[in-house]
Length: 477
Image 1: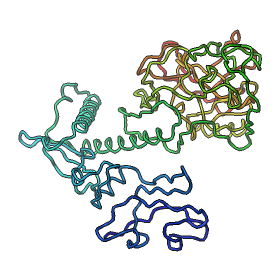
Image 2: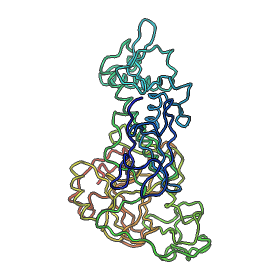
Image 3: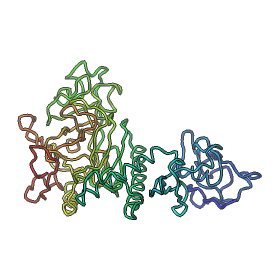
Image 4: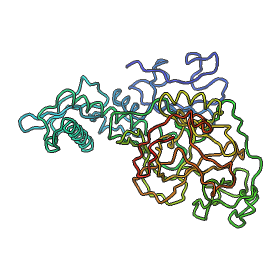
């Protein structure tokens, strides 16, 4: 019976797994639910030594509806089951597949006489136990297809780099050189990291729209030091108040002057289909949590979150990551919100100098009335963090007020300027200027600037634009 790892559970101050009575948590008053674990024959929770329970999917109930999230991923739990020869229907580990070998990825290829052989990295086993297998032994069509595509693309890239022809790249060598097989292993490992990141993004998102991730360009993995959030993160020195009143409407579409927009001398911003109908520069006032109307109110659009499926992909022309839509988006529809950490303009200027030296920035000035706060999406943000610039964008910025009516803290919403086709990349203008004829006052200037320096153009770093459109301004700023 192997020694297992103790589960990571927080105990009351002064208590430990050795001092806590079995079946209870002192100070909390609620018994624990015994984890569903199959113990070896003749063993039970009372006879298994303390500290010998591995990190299985433990569920500790402290109060009705309260659960402790498992610290291990599903694949890790499956690995534990196979190592300890335990069956678990919830994890898909049954008696039929308990002893099956699963292909994690393919590392190498060679052709001996007329037989194709692949070096297989087996899941749950170290690289040292990888084995050469004939193709007819492998029942993993998707893994084989992915390996072939990666190999063909790399052969083609090398042929182009050496001035060769495409036809030469199509001929596979009978044995791969070490650098090529090493690349294929790195590509397989990168794909695993991106898949894990994709799972993390979807676990953290609170909106309906699914997020996919792909990189068919290089070996770049998930960005470091980036945390996915769904709403603003308030930084130090920022005072974000809450709304204290709401409308009394039962049907907000009946009276355009009596709902939340009317309270601020504005008309409804949306039509009955939820599409924005006011011109860029005009603010949008949505109903809030204190309003009498329900969630189906037509004046609740941005607060419902992202409704479309998106894909974060690696761009082939050196623009880093980008975002494409996996669904058709109608003109004037809400697409996404730009969120990040709200910081003061002074802090934004300090960070801006650092970002200038790095050649990148994610600072968005909230200058609806004056430049007081800035949104920094460098380390905290949502999928808008990956949306690229274009001099002919398909997204337009609007200032939106919902739970907070402070004009210094608008929410930044991105709406479609035209119908966006499935598979098309999403972009907005980082240096967007609102046409004076479209604005309600000269205060309305939605400017995506560097480090809060929107009023100091001489200090800006000129960043080359790579959008590639015919009307490109050549520089972002």
